[in-house]
Length: 193
Image (cartoon, rainbow, N blue to C red):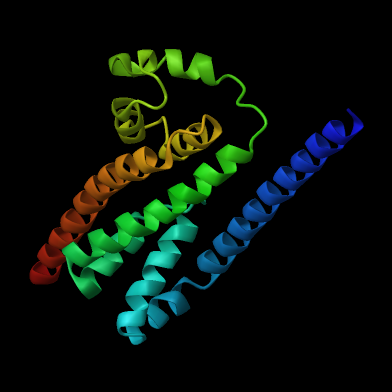
């Protein structure tokens, strides 16, 4: 019995340290990017194909922080065009969502989740967490937050394949809207001025 208690205690410690490490890494990335954005832009511009890969990794880090990724999506659409910017944003945001899923797996409890879920519009609150309609619909609702959906999916251990495809569908849709709209707006402004 003592071995079981020690094992549970070690798992909690490991889980807690993992979450703290991930959060500190994200805070560090947030501080670096916000203070060095001009340098980040130069690196992406001057790195050729490697810049595209760096963009994906940057989205992976930014998506799990409070920094909005839309300006980077629009910036990339001016370099690579809206289609490749959509691809970089979708893949990078998937990486971010997987980090959030991992954090959700390590959480000990989600307080008030059931009350939050009951208040969701369009009947989403009546759907099970592992429902594709819930995963797609809740992620697309403003104010509910894709980050929270990722944490909840990790906490309830939604099957990873289901989580990945629903995340890709919703993030690709949002990325395409941002990349194509931003590219069009910047092209129009460029012609006007």
